[in-house]
Image 1 (cartoon, rainbow, N blue to C red):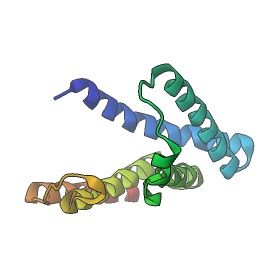
Image 2 (image 1 turned 45 degrees about the vertical axis):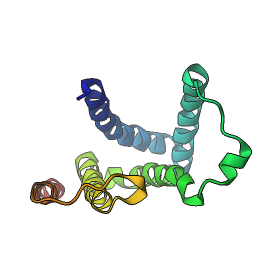
Image 3 (image 1 turned 180 degrees about the horizontal axis):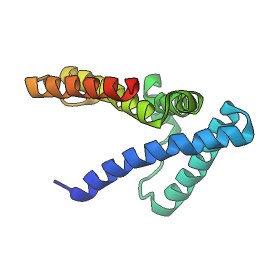
Image 4 (image 1 turned 135 degrees about the vertical axis):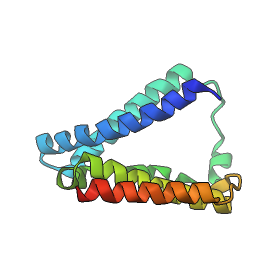
Length: 148
């Protein structure tokens, strides 16, 4: 097991928690949640352009290749925009703990379903009793965090 990847996965969670608070504060400063999300994505785009210029070693795909990619495979950015904008709207009202807990619960439930059916090109990982128990415990935890 690659412990560096496990650390990165953990840091994604930390970053996600911090991102909600940072973007919420940007919303307050700008007075506009959509503009705050736009600024967040522009900064992210700049970071990706720098990373691409510095580290990319692959050839760019041809226009022909891009044209033949199924339309739904480009929806990741839409989901990212939905996430960032929704966080900006709700985090101040429900709190960071409830937001992250509910987001993780939604991610885990969707992931278990995606794994079970092998959706989106993933390998099939059947639902098992330990996996179901993990989902149930997470839902119980989410209820406890959201209600208190």
